[in-house]
Amino acid sequence: MSYIIGIIGLFVFLGLAWIASSNKKMIKIRPIIIMIVLQLVLGFILLNTEVGNFLVKGISDGFNLLLGYAAEGITFVFGGLVNVEGSVFFMNVLLPIVFISALIGILQYWKILPFIIKYIGLALSKVNGLGKLESFNAVASAILGQSEVFISLKKQLALLPRHRLYTLCASAMSTVSMSIVGSYMTMLDPRYVVTALVLNLFGGFIIASIINPYDVDPEEDMIEEEKGEKQSFFEMLGEYILDGFKVAIVVAAMLIGFVALIAMINNIFLGIFGISFQDLLGYVFSPFAFLMGVPWTEAVDAGSIMATKMVSNEFVAMQTLSGGDFVFSDRVVAIVSVFLVSFANFSSIGIIAGAVKGLNEKQGNVVAKFGLKLLYGATLVSFLSATIVGLLMP
Figure 1 (tube, helix red, strand yellow):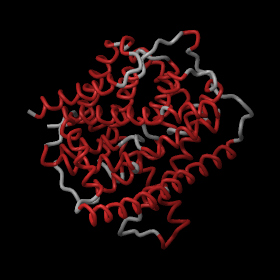
Figure 2 (cartoon, one colour):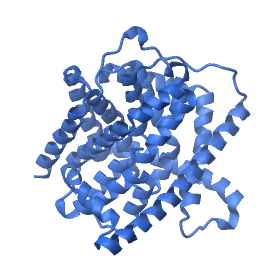
Figure 3 (tube, rainbow, N blue to C red):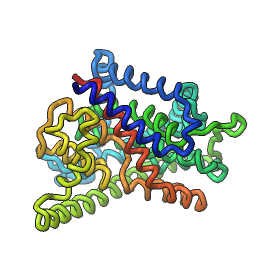
Figure 4 (cartoon, rainbow, N blue to C red):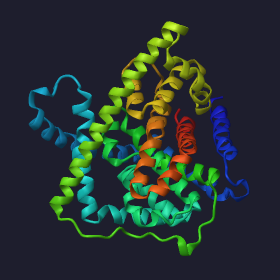
């Protein structure tokens, strides 16, 4: 029965994308079917095979090693402030972003990441029915992050029409940055984090192809590398280290604000209505959780965590999921975990619009105007990925 509900959910979420489509006649069915099949195949490999377990273990061990190195620097600076036996979220989850950001900068400087991004993007463009630029941007977003990725498109930004700009921004919101993947793995099972990264990449193409279909002129589909005065190695390293620290501080500030606001609103709702705000959101999101494959008995609690992610951010929701306040089956933990691994929340609208506006004010204003449609599409990507996992988990 759960498989039937999952298949119905798959069609419902694709249907919700179709309702919002800007040009229903231009939707290309064949690439969408191919990408859904790829999601199912890759998801099955990652979740249910020895090969998948080996790959996930290798990635997880790699990030654990990096987090161990990061801990050396954190302990040196903060010393006795680090709680060895307990867990300080800022120290153990956020500050490692500084070190991983530095590594990304080194790989960028040595042209390793640009090479990987370019050729994976070219391979994906053969499958997804979109342009090379869209495919390049999706891979770059998954590595660099939703604001930093637009720097690599600075020269082309002013020339992009509205429809292509939407797809680029939707990819940025549907993915996550590699600099914080290690942080996610401290709160969620690495298997679900890796699976979400892969599924969201294809899910972003699928939803964008339905909501925002168009043809790309091959002559306009060029990827220009950003050129300028080359930084020295240590200039670059210092810049990426500071950028990583800024990300950690911004996330910490957002968490303080959102957690405090949610606590206040919960108490206000409890006093007036006898139900917390999060529980109320849980009822709103519970039908969607049910369609993703969550049993109805757990759908309200799962919906509450999903809604928390959308109105605040994924870190708050992940902390709620891993905090032990809710008891879920392994299958529901997998579904909800995959849903949480993306930047699809209200604050991301401002982050992406601000990043684009910093590079091109006119295009930044365009992004701000379709901000809610961006969030709608990115949330559907999360629904789609989680539904695929619901179909694959026993």
